[in-house]
Amino acid sequence: MKQSAIDRKVEFIMEIGKALHVNGVSAQNLEEALVKLSNKLDLQGQFFATPTVIIASFDTDEGKKNSMTRVSPGIIDLQKLMRIDRIGDSVLADKLSPEEALKHLHDLSQSKRLYPAILEVLAYAIVAGAAAIFFKGGFKEFYLSIGCGVIVGIINELTFNNALSKSFEFIAALFVSLATALLFSYSGDFSIQLVTIASLIVLIPGLTLTISMTELATNNLAAGTARLMQAILTFFKLGFGVAIGTSIVASSVHGLKFFEKSHSPFLLDFTWPALIAAAFAFTILFRAKLLQYPWVLAAGIVAFFTTQSASMIYGSDLGAFIGGLAVGLFANFYARFRKHPAALISMPGLILLVPGSIGFRGIASLVHKDTLAGISATFDMFMIAIALVSGLLLANIFLPPKRSL
Image (tube, rainbow, N blue to C red; front, side, top):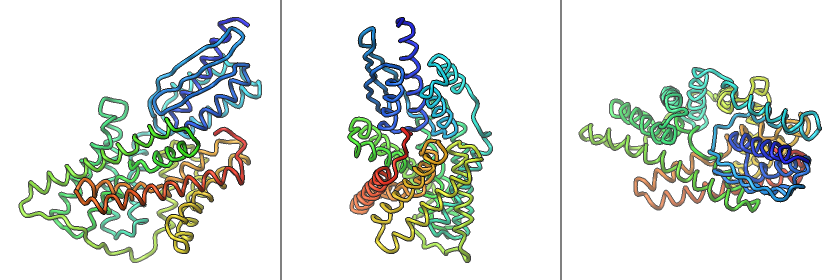
């Protein structure tokens, strides 16, 4: 075998690994997928993946080859993830050569975004409004959350792929807190905390936290620790942004005091419309095709109502475990039935379960020097995350997806 052929195989494996990483695949699933591909190509590979680097060592006919690729966490793109999975499956089935697959990967990396910017901004607003309903807010909280969600969406577009992208969460939290605090200074008859959390709910790294706990539970200690610190840092970015914005308004308006007003609930139960709308918005934000919307909605229904019902009977921790188990089983069934990555279902389903809002409240309390409340909320966040991960891992035992992703 010529050295150039081996180099092309190694290049393909590292490129597909980078593509999977950028689109939100966890370390254990990424490493498992790369091992399968390297074995198929007669390259006995060993892989070490973290949120910032993929290191590989290959035993080939020409001796040992080492490779390292520097990567940065990207935006979850489920449509691209499905296409990458198909490319990998085609190589495993001998339908594509590594050279042809590499060309497909390069074409995929150059493809345009699936949805226009205006639709993604609308999706941020929809999620914020739905979150206000899930948190039992009133009509005023609902409308204000939608407005602040638009602000978050616009900031996302303005900071996308430029120098400000690393400060996106802080900037969004700052402007949302400025807007809510200014409105509160004029009226004061709404729950400022509920509106703030609902508006920023998409940015709260509950999903990142859950993935990090999964990596730690599967002995991917370096990847799990790095991703956990990434989640904690994002919590602090959001917390400091809210604290600074609130402080600016408080110092500008004489005599202004912020207090948590008890909000009046909706006259009707809008849970179902909110769930239907949120599933559509997550389809847009996770960049899945609209054909996947019924599956995303089904995952949301399974996640939300299973967790709600179980929590009322057994408490929040066990309710999260049962919810994680239900989402995991449903996602694995989907993967076996449709021959698609289970992540297409598990990620949108988990987003309704992850304990991000609890963690945000904990960080906000710590920033405002309410240490006891902050520690209590942070501990609750980790307990719910562990319960979710336990449910997902048990689902993989009861109903293995038979796929790396």
